[in-house]
Amino acid sequence: MRDLPARTVAYIRVLDPYQSNSSAVLDACNRLVDWAEQRGLADGAWLGYMREDPEIVALEDCRYDVAVVVDDSRFDFRPEGEIGRFEFPSMLVADVAVRGDIQLVQRTIDWLFGTWLPRSGFVPDDQPAFEAWNGRPFAHGYEHFETSCQLPVKRA
Image (cartoon, rainbow, N blue to C red; front, side, top):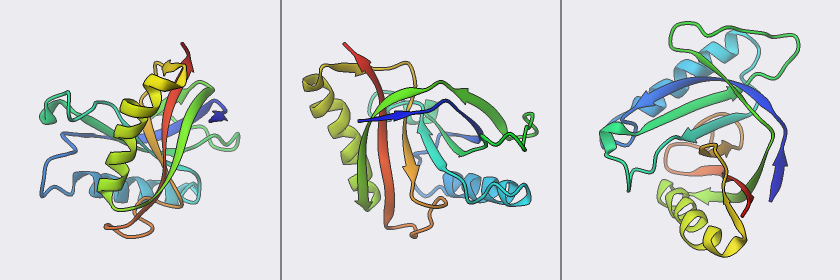
């Protein structure tokens, strides 16, 4: 369990992110990394927000936001083009570190929701589940991930 402070993120939303043979998420990550590098933000915290569960919501209706934290008093920005801005409140999260392939990341999220949550005394908060990358997105390659799966929760 971790308490996270309020934070502002810049993000790119990917529609239909789970389609096979698609590089939409990787392409969005690369564009946001370029944007962040130009502004001196690329070495900040990188997050991936899963807006819907692809096992419940039709794949074509799912959304994924790749984001970088921009909580820096020296840098205030407004949304521009495909770059959005979102302000998250402080929150309590269940946090599980993951080192492995994308299937391990998905199994961890399934475990958080399906096994841990019903027994935890917590319920989901009104924020999306997300992954917090160690370093930049895909810093450890495309087959191996080093990330934390984080589920915002509140007491039942």
